[in-house]
Each structure stands twice: as structure tokens, then as C-alpha cells.
Length: 437
Image (cartoon, rainbow, N blue to C red; front, side, top):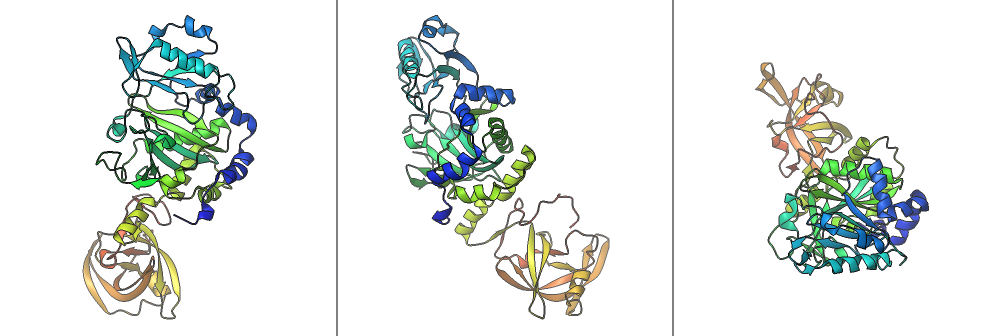
């Protein structure tokens, strides 16, 4: 992991990021789940339905319990850390079933609600409100990598920009809850791609879901771009500058915002093997005009985890389709030029004008006829030394007319030994696929 000084601790989180950007009045709204739902609904953001709110003991007796669907969730309004939540999975002849298959009676559910009303699960042990909410139907994508409960995706958003994300997978040990401290699996997600990277369980790295041979890295989260967009919109709707947004994917209804957290935990750094503080500092002073721009910035800034993992395994650097190269001239000076990787070409080609300006055009050592866009043509060959990444490449390249092309150099396969190419990775810019090479 990067240097520990970049890790975000709880005190730094509170003093540097939460207090300056999150007024107490707005934090109080986010701590109140029902008020949060009202805020999100007013911004037309997707949330699970609320079937019933219980404010007093009398509400328990007047409610028609038969009106509930077969599955639902009982929650405390001011709860924290997943405490006090009761998930009802289905009906039985004598009542309902819990996550572990045990039977729940109506009396059990009423007792749970009474405990909530008494404040046993609230932030300050004060009397609370209970409510019954729609149970999320687990998306098919997660069926084989979770146990009974609903996986969720935690996205940390700061200054509108999603900066870090993780997937939390319920296990048998966690009782079907997506709570890391109770035994759920934490899986890092690369912001740029939505692909899972590292997985952690009970403080150690793992490759497979608990008790199975189902790999947890390299999975592409469905609807990833929309998840990032929704997380950013939720942060803006809340008014808080720093926020954790918990999102679930419902099998039928798609993205749903399960909860907002004004003080999100910091284990997300372990799941991603990346310090959060450095990411927050990179975006805190940016001027972000809208959500589309925020997501674009996030994907541009916080990509590359997949490539770094591949580099660690293979020992080969991963480069994008657009790169910077440094051409070495006779006077031993380096000249930086934008180039495009072209795996369809064998030999690298450089434009006449660039070769001339660098004093290379008169070093012709041969020529060869090649098939070009307008038929066959003879191209001169010159020696060239350049740096791609940290690698020094001595080669022979074509000179060609590239005056109408976007890039003065295209790099062919002949010079790409020892590199891995990622077509989705751009080393310095994003360009339209139809741009002239």
C-alpha cells in the first residue's frame, strides 16, 4: 500500500473533510433515514418503498399486518452500523422466516419494533421511530457471490466526485448482512471501469467467496456508470460535501439508494489497497459544473488499479493506446511527442516534418514499398531512439506524410515487445475512435 501518511484516519476524516464541508444541520437530516428518503425522493432519486411508519405503540395494534408483502425489512429510523434491522425473507404457515431460515412470529416482529421505539438502536439511545421497507431482490449478478442477504456498493463522494468504491458481500458468518464488521466480504472496485480488484475478509486478502471457488476479482459490476452518476446526485441532494452512498441493485427495479452515511467507515481503503486521503486532496479544489463532468473526472483520475495488478503479476508494463514518447536526438536531448499505439502496423512510422525538425530526416538507411491508404508507396527508413515509459527503444522506423493525421508518430508491433496494451487506457487524453491517426 502507499505510504501510511496518505491513509485517512478517523480524526483527519472528521477535521479535514467532514467538518469543513458538512454542516451539522444537514448531517442531522442524513442521520434521519426517513428525512433522507424525503430529500432523495424530492430529487427524483430511486429509493426502496416504505410500507409503514411506527411512531407509537398504538400504531402496532392498528396496522393491518396482512397488507405486507411476503418479504420486507424492519428498520430503526436513527439506527447506525446495521443494528436493529430485521430482514423478513418469506411467509410460513405460522409466521415468517428470517435469513437463517428460523421462524418469526408476529409477536417477534412487534417486540423488535418496540425495541426500536425505545431507542435501543438509535445513535444517542433516544426514543426512535420504526418503519417497514421494501426488501431488495438480489440481482442475478450477485447470486453466486453472496449468502442470502443483499450485497451493496459503498461509494465515497466528495465535491460531487466519486473517489472510491467497494462491494460488500453478505456471508453465512455475517448472518446474511452486508456488514464488514459482522463478517461480510469487502471487495475493492476500480472507479474507472467498475471492475472488482482485491477482496478482504476478516482482515486478510482472499481470492474466492467464502467457502467456494468463485473468484471475486475481475468482475464487472452492472450499470456501473449509472451507479457513479446516482452516487454523485445523492451527495449533491444531501448538501453534504463528504458522503458515503450505499447503493443496491434490485433484480426488477435496478439501482436503489439504500442509505446515506455522513461518517462513512474507512475500511474501504483496505478493500482498495489505496489511501483515501490522497484521492480526496486531488479533487477538493476542483470546480465541477455538473454530474456528468464529475463522473468523467472520477473515471479519468481513479483508473489504473487493474493495470497495476497485471503489472505486478506479469512484470510487464501496461500502456494505453495513446502515449507520450521521448525522442532522443544526436545532441542527447529528449523531445516529448504524443504518439498512438497501432498494433495493426508492424513498423513504427514518424511524420516527415517532425523528423526534419529533430534533425533525423537525413539519416536514411534504406527504403521499402508498403501498401498505404492511396495505394503502394516507397517509404524511407531511418534509425530512431526513443523512450516509451521507462524503456529505451532503439529501432528503425518509416518516414511518412502525417501532416493530415492527429499523431506525428504511430508505434507498431515491432517496438512493443515487453508491453501489454490496454485499449481502454489512455495515458494522457481521451479521443474519439474515428479521429485520424
